[in-house]
Length: 111
Image 1 (cartoon, rainbow, N blue to C red):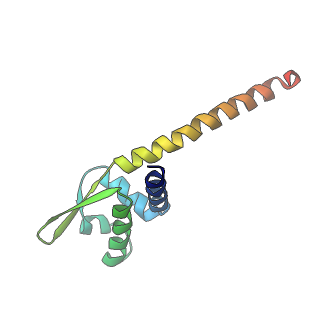
Image 2 (cartoon, rainbow, N blue to C red):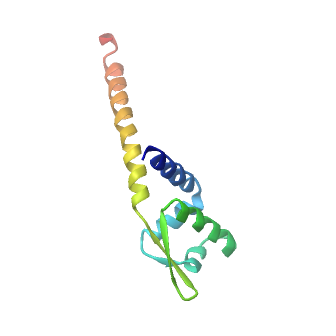
Image 3 (tube, rainbow, N blue to C red):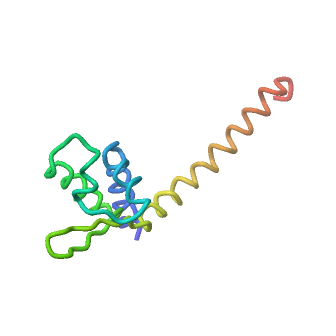
């Protein structure tokens, strides 16, 4: 279980590291789209966009359905929820640290 979650997180964060892939996910948040529609706003070849889509698929962030020659992509939320849960643990940790720092800076005599 730990190995699988670690692999999932690695793939999700790696996929999210690229601005083109983040833009594709933002577009898919509004609804399913064909590969051609997803490629439209990007100044790159269709094979280059397809490579980005493959990386997003491998990370589990999108799913593909085929209707004849048309490939439709749809957002998959589970991997993003797992990444968010992982980040949430660290947000709480840093919030507590920053609260302590804020208190120390407000009252430097209370060391």
